[in-house]
Length: 284
Image 1 (tube, one colour):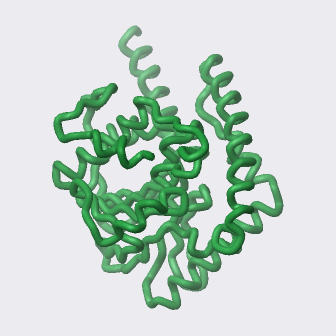
Image 2: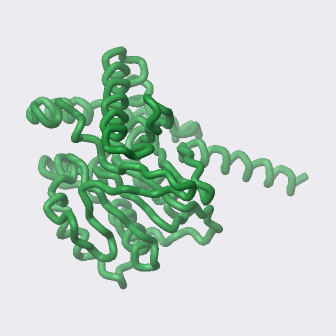
């Protein structure tokens, strides 16, 4: 299991890929979820790039950081996945407040709720107060997924089908990289086109927002459905930070309380384009 792998990462351990020596954009808070370390679908390289270019006072890990379901089927833990864990633990050691809210795929950590692990606080849910005074409920979101709660076997069947789609997604990505094309998610595109998936996502968002409103908070931050979004539902601010399997997104809070979804593949593409422009300018 991954707990043994994590336990081997001592403060003196070194990553296989050193941190990039670049200036970092600093935010008040960063929210990420659905990384699925331990699965072949995890875009660890993009997440490493993200972690090397941003920083924050507080960081929330909003569930499914490690994919225990996949690791039970077949152990898969490349060096890049260790590098992600190393970077997260280093943030905690250097003073970033880290809150880890396990999801359904890393539910084995829920038994440790209330404890701290290497400076990372493990909680079932949390209340985050923004810079402009709003209270946001932070939780993974599988609590509101009837399939996961009531029909666990069906959830695992769906997970297996999703794994097959992600395998196809990796092949498409490899071809695009070979031709110098930017990252694009086939699975995200397919999900957006399937009527039932769109209806499920919409209903999930409504249920989560309604539950947050009933608890008297201003908004909610969750993950689980791998679909980043920001919108108001029945007077409640709904935020989903997306994932690092399909869309490679994070939710960030600026120092004035403003929230933003970062699409990191787009950030990398824009950075590459600006480097090309700069190189051409210098050559001219």
